[in-house]
Amino acid sequence: MLVDSHCHLDRIDLKPYGGDLNLAVQAATERGVSKMLCIGIDLNNAPTVVGIAERFPHIYASVGVHPLDISDEVCSVQTLSELADHPKVVAIGETGLDYYYSSDRKEDQQRSFAQHLQVSAACGKPTIVHTREAREDTLAIIAEHGSPQVGGVLHCFTESWEMAEAAMAMGYYISFSGIITFKNADELREVVRRVPIERLLVETDSPYLAPVPYRGKKNEPKYVVEVAECVAELKGLSYQDVLRHTTQNFERLFPLAK
Ligand SMILES: [Zn+2]
Ligand SMILES: [Zn+2]
Image (cartoon, rainbow, N blue to C red):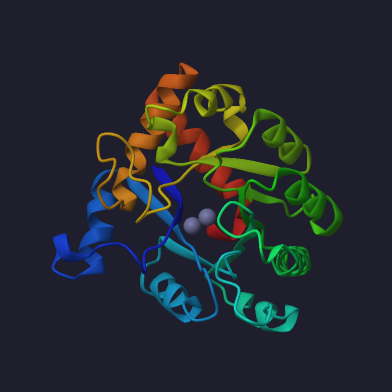
């Protein structure tokens, strides 16, 4: 039993499956992937990701606006709350701050992030946070607007141990993607070793960031196996232990996906 805690099923390449999402999902299931969280990135794809979650009992959805997909107007608290009010929506996001790809709209990103955290706290559905080159602001906004009881996850984590530690102190989990298998990721692998297994999730972030040995190809949920294997090796745990812990962690963080 393995969970892909972050995938974009509306964007994965279905050509190898003749365009049939059922077959891509089945390919993941056959490798032991028993649950997936399909992530929303803006208002346009929200109906699509929720629709996918409605079709499959073991797939859940999140709704939110990615920091790089904020339109002219920041999405209102009310609109977000309405989208979140669905039984298969178990999380809010992805939201967060990305100063690496976009430093010109910092204020909009910050306002959007704060509003997502407010909705998350109000509806009790944890926040999925994307953070890149914005360590201090990310932590400060979570501290100000987040709910430690509801918590959330720093997804596709590529930042420092200090940031992971500060986020965990605020009730957050740390999710690692295929990046931990990349040759040049020694520093990040050190962070994987230090994050307690009780606070760690695995994800593909598919269709991006396929793990070694598929690096450079299109990613899909079935490759979360390689991420979990890498975690097992780095932490000196059995693969089965990693499956058990990461699944328990996922269900603890997202009780609606239990
Ligand atoms: Zn992201
Ligand atoms: Zn994502």
